[in-house]
Image 1 (cartoon, one colour):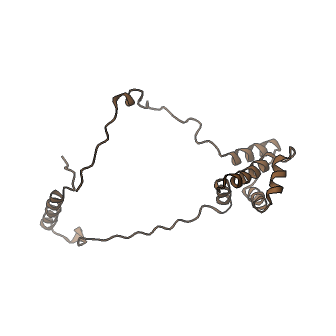
Image 2 (image 1 turned 45 degrees about the vertical axis):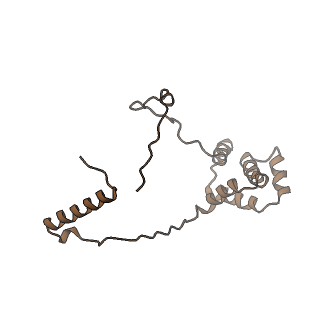
Image 3 (image 1 turned 120 degrees about the vertical axis):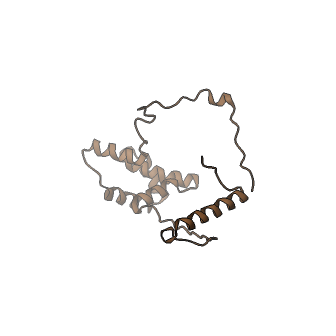
Length: 160
């Protein structure tokens, strides 16, 4: 079995690090809001209305089906509400950059994140035993066997 290599730190790289003091908060304002959520909140305050998630999803759904020309016209119109301009620019930005970062965010906002499947395979190489039905001597013998095997394979941590 290969030995794990330890990373050697340069002492100069650690001299500016300071420990966190008890009660110290490193991010007092929390995670920043994303641009779309920020504009929706500001727009709602400006017009004294609360936009529901359904309202926002309807706008996003309509805009995702618009042509590039229509989105460009909306984005460049000074009378268009700010949150609609942000959504239009997000879609146009994805088209320009040839990615789906903003569109993916909007789709996840509408429909939730896609379920990610995980395939797990395990091979059990030892007999599974139930310690509840074992005597104390059997448990000691089994633990000794495991410890000796781990020492042979150098796959253990010594507990003091």
